[in-house]
Length: 130
Length: 383
Image (cartoon, rainbow over the protein chains, first blue to last red):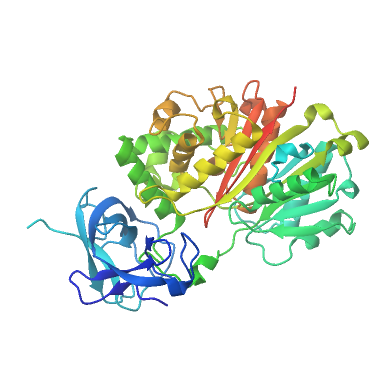
């Protein structure tokens, strides 16, 4: 299973995948083949995507569909500065402080029982203006 | 050379039947299915022994549910198969029945949808391609995100989106097969528990149990079996599509629906403006606004305003979800797409009672399935 991030940069980069045949850059990565042109996995290579982008939309979910994930939580649609649009869980549990157009960045967080995720993983957070 | 349904021999819906959509009960799925099938056979006034092929749309019952149900109609040895295509399972069963009759392989085919609620296990979750929202992206969260984006883009309010539920509950109160039969005010819809984003519980469809059946027949069968030609409704087109990779920023659900509905209308040689009645996959209120625009019933960002003016009411320019839709009639999964074809047929026959769209001649049924897939049929009452 592919890791979803490349540690080292600050903020951490997402592990994007570039297709050597058609040039498409996708996230999340997959071990099978290019969704755009069908080229096999050997044609795909890692491409680091900067963990910064702009909030396109966000919602707070109040209704749990899994017992191992605590509510409320907030997920967002984010246009990465490097192109792809990704969906991510926000550090902010509710959307009270968020606005469309806000700048956000990736954060590597430890696994937590409330996240349904035992391993370190990526969330996003609103970037405070300097 | 590739052919469309319309270029093959004509196929007709000649019988419809339903078991009420309802909350999960102890009723066996066999009872649900047989109720709908027997009603469809009675409606067509033919015996089960005339049916030559059966497709069962079901996603939740487990392996091989068809024969355990159908044998009680008299085990006739005909080909039977289950069709699983998520929420579009029933629509896909209808499509398979239409294609089989249109091709000439059989003259009478039955499409039945049956399901009972259970814990859903999605193959997607074990595909080995995790993302950043694994476990956090239930359908209601997904569509709440689309709602947020839509409202921000077009300056539409949460109240305008919630108005979809008010209309569809109003339609469902006159549908004896509907899961939700109580009309609701806008205040009630907005005051229901928040699920995700601005979507309240009354803007999310109920998943229950039920059954729906349609009998598809050729002209040969209509003549040979003395089926009432005046009540036969022709299926003009049947289109099934799956999601492609769309340009960044375009919502894949709406794009998939846009191209599927455009093909369904083109293959039927019908413009969207000619449609009198449409059943959309409104599992969540926002979807109806997105798909009304994707079909081309109005321009982008205009659906909410037209909804408030009654354009999509029964009696309006185009009746949208006169059955109550998934929000009102309910979404028992397998039956839903078949039930839509029942409703369109009833409307085109002029037999929809208090839900009747006046002088309905052309109708469209549309389902989306997680994955995503999209299936649409255009039907007409021939003069």
